[in-house]
Length: 470
Image (spheres, rainbow, N blue to C red):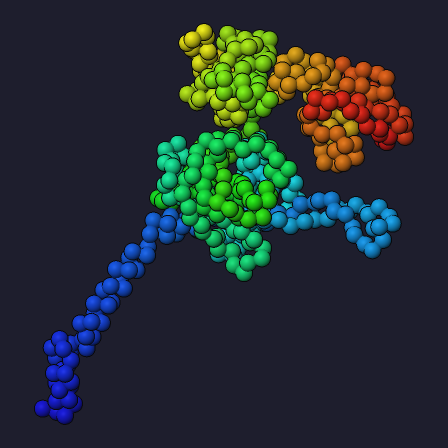
């Protein structure tokens, strides 16, 4: 026997469990440790890890350049009025791919006013993005990139979410400050569903029927997916509450838009380029009626448009609505949430209070009067329609006649101060009764002539002085 063979056999005798020189020399303790480590590695791969890995390849970073007004500051500001200028300002958000040919869903506020959009894939590839359409009411926008065979997310349902179940939020907080483009992951639970959020100074607009989570949603996460433990997207991350009321960081109050609403809006944008709102033809009591909601057990109808959908369904002013399409109506926000998910032509079934009991009524939604009204374009950037009783009821206007602004370009808005939703009531001493007359009065104005426009905004009559230049 060779010396090497003999030495190996000698060592084998010293190592417990070693059978021969050709066998493994790992002691039993080490083998046990390896088995334990393998078990720990298996236990580390939780549902959160699996959910994140299934989604991350379809989550993108969105960088936007938009033009904003800024005030130039200098040491002379104490003596002079600071100059206002416009600059291109970058901002960032998140999106996720829903179609392999480059269709991406994000928040509308992420791309609002964008002059350019850059979409960064998880591998770092930058692609120019095109805004297909946006809907400020639901805070959903659709962006497209020119790329095929992209990974897509798996869609789930928000309707069967359980309070307390695990959810995962993916996004790109502070994406432009970080060194890579891979999405970050936060985890939490579903804190509540059907949350309605009132507007405030930091967060304009209504957020209705939202999913609340304590998963951290930080700046830049907006537009990213909220997924269940199976890795299925159940909502779109949209907003947070912070200690200061702004959006500087998360304190465990995050909100997300149900995926069913987001996909409905996205599909409509892809089909027609816009979202068509349904008209019910009724209004209910607003925030001032909070005590009435509690005592009456429902919301009171304050206005019904003549020959509108609700009127044809037998709804009258003063009717108390307690339920709509199976949803309990505790206040006007619940009614607004029902309306938000209605299509034109949908059936609306309501339960109304009648004595000590309830009755059921049904009606079919119609087109908004403003969407079917004849539109007049003036100033090459201002679109108006004539105020009719139906439009007055639709928009809750005080003025029974005038020219309602339904579209205004940024350039005209900056030059005139007029906004979408304003109702033109008069020019100088001439009352405006319809859209056509408004256009004629403007066209009849002399160049460089100053004139005063009176208009209704948010229920108040105000005026502005302008100079017409051709």
